[in-house]
Length: 364
Image 1 (tube, one colour):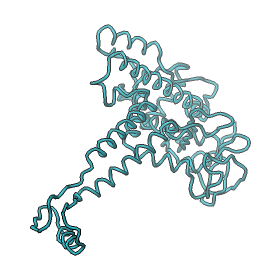
Image 2 (cartoon, helix red, strand yellow):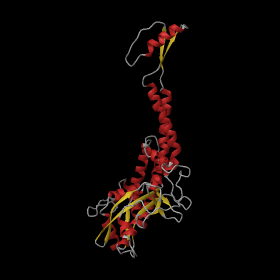
Image 3 (cartoon, helix red, strand yellow):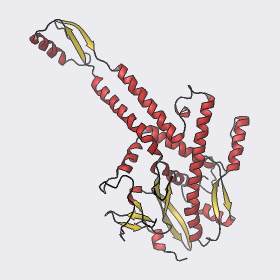
Image 4 (cartoon, one colour):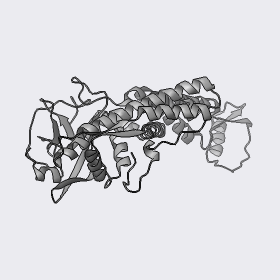
């Protein structure tokens, strides 16, 4: 196998233009400098409920037990390469496929003697990448021209990608209606806050004389918090408040937060209403999150096995060997049995992010 050292050890550049690619979602009629699809995702990622729900789902996935299978020499080589990385964070970056659907991560390779190793793995903005007509991954330069990505240079994490939808699907797609309604309600709360921070009031009088009404209005118009005034002709002053409307908006926002949580994590009880829910319903929601987490972990590890781990072996002359990192189904089942019988988690030999081997400096 002929290896091009320069393309592997050099960050993606901006030459060698190429045309012909699938347009990204939302970009068919957009100007090339802005993409409404990614713009919507980036805006939604400012929402605290979305951030918290995604972090919960990702953390739960990385907490699951894993195991290495394959040739011992191949496994030792991969572990040695990973020891130079903050691999837990690299896995979290890979799981950004949940919110993005299409998540390219560039590998910065380096060479020491005859051995290749990984200096870092960098999450790249998906806007800079396209899927070519032949299914190849293309990289966009500053002039919006495209070139093929060098072999073994970029890992592409996708969620629910198909031949017709190669850019995958964001989990936030199902959140959009709830998020839009939530922020409309939040905007109304902000407007009410500005309007009623200094309460408005109405002065009731018995006079219809326009001069007297103008005099009363003028005398009351300059009142600020803590001021007092005496004026004739006023029977009663009524302060306008927004109590009822405000409570309705707060309830609407809370309802949409729960809907967002349910879409992303499959549960609401663990994030705000466990005190009102039943144990049975809470168990159903918890099981749903567990299923999501296991599915996410398997998808993540499958991509690492087919790209990074395979490339490490091939570049270092061990491409004929096999090594994979898999979800440890048996250890997981044992941990569930232990929790059911004793209420205490089982101490696993390799329990996901809870494991820290100082000799490896990584969490696997």
